[in-house]
Structures are given as structure tokens and as C-alpha cells.
Image (tube, rainbow, N blue to C red; front, side):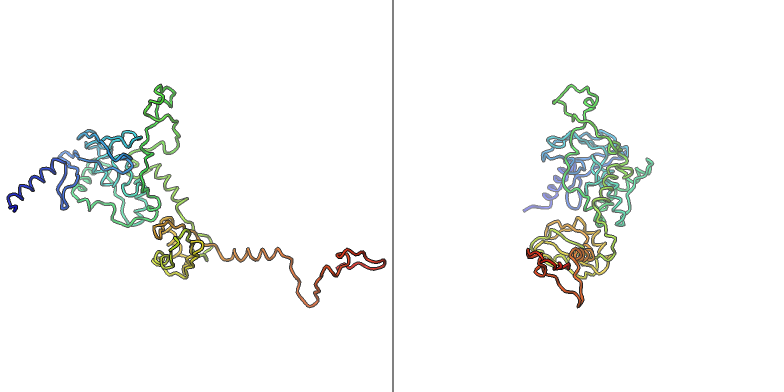
Length: 375
């Protein structure tokens, strides 16, 4: 039987092992943490990275150096990590400290959001529409250090981001899978000048730079979410391709749903749309795996389209959504087909004409002195 003295000895051993591994004791056990000394220098045991920057190789070997470089944002020394991002990737390193990364919830290397994989400017724009205030770091050195010190006193659960519901546009734009193209080698500057003599042994890419707005990216602008060309490109894409524009006819209140699963029932469709407002009717077309949802008002239909476009899933299957077509066009198409047929006169004086009434239609010539029927 284990006594109190042996339990205390075991607890001291566990705490000592945790300190050797660079961990910190919390209510749920040990966690990887970053310690900051009195001078504000940061020492960490593992970086804060996204899945893309880690690369496709599950066995990552990292090099680290305590206080090896200054943070590009707060200009305080921190632990730098360096590794090869995948089998075909280049060597990457951390460029900002963990305190700045946690404040903005971004990767220490690419400075993209850890939850959505998007630039800070895109994320903050749509989160502000949801009611969350933007987290800004003061420009002065004293204000910046004070803000970071106050953030370090908070627990991980008290960090600013992740408190409000996600914006529907963020769900459409989110990159949930790794994008390893960002880990490719950089372009060889000697090849651009025509002076590279390494050939196939050159570790850099032998391509010409494309130029454009993406060629002028600044690290501080990406971190603060201001004047970021990558964010501007994504916002244009969100405006053009990720928005379902309502038709000009205000009488249209019907949404078309395509690609429904074969086992989909009317109840499954109703469960997704009833939260937005009163539904007039739901028409299921099982043969074509589609449905038509008609709302009572146009405002409710627009809200449902803006919230569920490109993110609606029924039975783990992505559902396509479009606005319904007006009924007058269908009626107009039918009337135009009828107009192509000759109009039949009505009235009691009309007498139909048959080919047998005309001798010329039967191949007979008229007799001399007989008049030809001109009807």
C-alpha cells in the first residue's frame, strides 16, 4: 500500500520531469508553454504552427535556438525554430514570438489564421460583422509591451478569438486542408539574371517571377490586417464567386436545391430552413434529386440564401443552391410556342377547306369554261 510520503515523492518526480521537458503545470496536467523572463525574452519548447507550414512529412526534425532572433512585431528576442517543411519543401523558420501569435491567433511562420487558414484582414472583416471587436497592438513600444504583458496573464481559454459564431462567408472561404504549394522553394535570383550555373542541382526554382500585386507583400501589414494584397484578392473572390445575388424581381421567394441525397425527405429540408422564417411550401422532386423551397417573404429568402449558400449540407453531402425562376417566363414560353401556329378564325361564317374540294389537288385538270376554285 502506498503511503503519503511515497505519493509526495512521486509528485515531485512528475513535476521535475515536466520542468525538464519544458512544460508548465495546469489544472489538466502539463502543457507546452512559453516562459517570459523579466526582460521580456521568450523561451519556448515548441512553436505555434499551422498544418501547412509543418509539411506533409509526419516525422519533423527541428532545430531551435533560445533567444536566437528578434520578433518582427514586438522586437523582443524569442526561441527560433527551423525545419524542412515536407519532402519537397524548403526550410522554414518562425519569424514572430508566441505572444504575438497567440494575440492574433496566427501561425508563427505564415501569419495566417490557425482556425480558417485565411489572412488576418479577411478574418477580422467578417468577425467584426458578427460583433467581435478587432484586436489591435499599439504602435508605440511601451504600449505594445504593456498589451503583451496583460495578455500573458490570461489563460488560454481567455484569448480574444474564438468567442463568437463563425460568419457564413468565413465557412465558405476557409481552407480546411493543407496547401503545400506555399512550401515550395523560392525562385532562383541567379536564374532570373541568366547567371545560374547549377542546372538541375540548384535547390531553387528556375522560373520567372509573375509580378503583379502579390509581389509586394509586407509582413507587418499581413500581421496587423492592413493593405494586404492577398486579403484583397480573397475579398474580391468572395464578392464575385461566393455571393448568391438575388434576382431583381421581388416576387421571387423560391430557392432551388440541387444534388440532394436519394434518401432525403421533406423533413430534412425543413429542418435546415425553418430557423430563418415562415415557409410557404416545399416541393420535392425525387427523380431529379432536387427540391424547391418557397418562403412567405422575400427578406426571409434572402437571409436563408446568404447564410447557407455553398455551406449547406444534408446527410454529409454538399447541396447546390440557386434562386428560382419566375413563373411568368415559363408561361411566356408556352404562349410563344402557341403563337407560332396559324391562328384559326372563329365564327359561324367560317367554312373549313379540304384538299378534296379542289380538283387541282386531286390531279385533275379543269374543264374548258370552268372556273378554278380560288379558296
